Length: 388
Image (cartoon, rainbow, N blue to C red; front, side):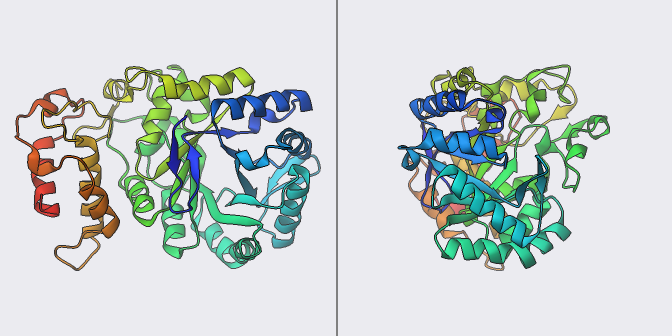
């Protein structure tokens, strides 16, 4: 298992995380088996969006003696009422539900307190007023280590980044969602009319969100990487082609700021299959070839960080150079300083083994690129911006 930094939290999380929706309805013995498999595969990051008390109790039993092996992401504002899950913005309900989960899991803290499901700016303002103060209280008392927010709306997520409290973002990332503009209704992301005409390139606000997260050290853990499973079936996917789980995971992990993909599973074997991504071949993870043949979708001219441009005769990591170029250009556009480059971007570029100045303009990379990216021009821009 590979591990990545979760933004600037100091946490190292497994690239494959575990969503526990599939634990609902399982016996204590089945949950015990699934947690054991999660541990054996090296998965150390677990998300609990569901407040189902029976499921949480079974997880607590399964974690006994090994709680410290896992990073737990628990949701604030997700409560259990009358035998079902509900979302709330009531401070007292949220506090009581959180305390109950600590008890059921058998722990005195959660690494991440994830404010649950905010897709509208008005709801975000309610959170700022009522829920963020509670989240800060929990953090100050050591009951959560870091504050997060889950959302499907890049406009809301960007507003949350600007406010400054959010350290972890749980966000829906997949090749179809990334084409769609911000909106307050998640169902619109999958509506037939949203894909009725040809779509070109990633929505600029989503691209900006990923880049802003990376620049500000806000770690992203991904939900909906498989589009609820629809992307795995040509007849259900709006893209009209079938993607594999490995292609979906690789796509999500290639976005700036992303640390982990929460892969839900209903059985222990499905968790094994998710974790087997780490042993998959480059061909099995190659999402670019699939994206390039989507009939109504084009990423022409947009670097997808897929690595098809490799190998470079000068061993330049073209995808990484391009990523740092895009990060620097986006931030430079917001600055009044003519030669401004964010320190973190500059330093990350600096430690690359090979830089854009070594490009010999041979063009081999452009011939291999599925998306017709002007790589040679990008290398020239990188030299101009970074100086080498």
